[in-house]
Length: 520
Image (cartoon, rainbow, N blue to C red; front, side):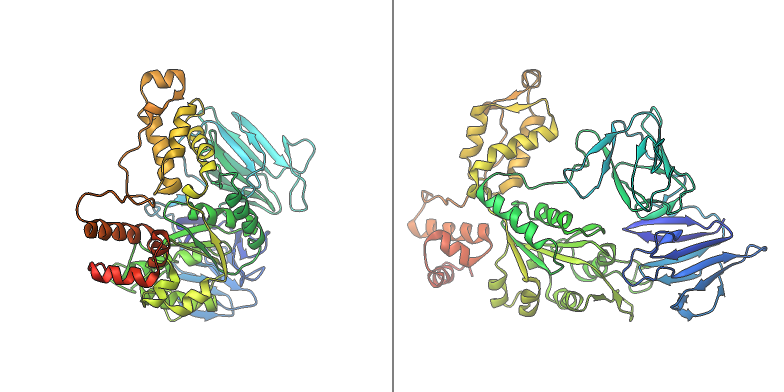
């Protein structure tokens, strides 16, 4: 059987072509949907004749086959390359062995996943869930279905979910008009894994595991600072303007970005990229994608994270650490909403919400020549500030209990342990608290596990780093203590302005002291 081989959201996929024809487009009724703003309702049709020869017939716009635009139907041959809005595919005439990592839609077998739940409206944290038990569950608009779903795009007996005793889950399309989609790919029958998104017509579900493994992350806290943060997220989420999230390392900037995405109503993916993790060509390729032959080792086209986030949100963490050459190219993408893959001369449109995060003072970075001024003003349209954990100590107990419940609902913290946690300065913020709670739970002795209570003596705090309440009782001369204090403050805050403020001195005084001690 002929197939189309392509990538979607980073996963290589094989889509079988069932005679006599397969439609491609943005319409829900198409066999293979193109989730792209510039795709036509019917972009193209693949048709086969009695001899098994496949042809592609373009819609209103020409179709690129091996880089050549065609306005009339054209025959397809093995390994022909098709370029459509939001998708680059290879036409394969035989049943090829799937490439490494390929998720064959109709015959993949995930490991057993007991305790499955079907979550309604995946982006809504308060949405209800339906436990799935071994057996069959019919889904549709008909009154005789096990799960009745009302909607204009839902057939009477739309689909059937089958769960076997070992926890394997399979979905079957019962001949519905508007199709069954797994992770935005239309299927007739497919295995489901935990985390897969299932769409019937216009109704969406998420397959989740018991115990909260797929529960979306959330901003935990009842302090005034956190309430204000939630309200601001709700206000700015509907807008597509770039957002800059500021906060110390470990304060939860990535969690705030995910909450912003879930509240935005965008139906695409949340895709994260750490600007400090890669450099040079690798970072550019990861972000913008590349075409085959763009550089040594580029053996096939790669769409890049910008296009994976099509219709969704791209979260770029540690934007302050991005190299200047990459900043220049990113500025063009943010302004024009067009991306040019490495090695390509073609601009491709992107519909992505940009969210950036940093622990640095970008204004100071601009002054020092390490960050582009034009990019700074472009990404700082809307701003969120994450408070440090020491600035919302009333949330420490709530956070600690939350982390412990996610690890083991049977464990709890004594009042003495909670009091001890609230006394600590937490230079690593929420991330450090999370690690302390998990380490304490995992290293707890048998008597703790039997009693279910972690006491003050059971806490495993680990190595302590310098805190914002900088020590002034270091051994050595006054000058050496002053030098180390200034060094710790600048290192901790990542900003000379904020370090000077914390030390209670003018910024100009801090610069003089740093020059005096050779710290500049």
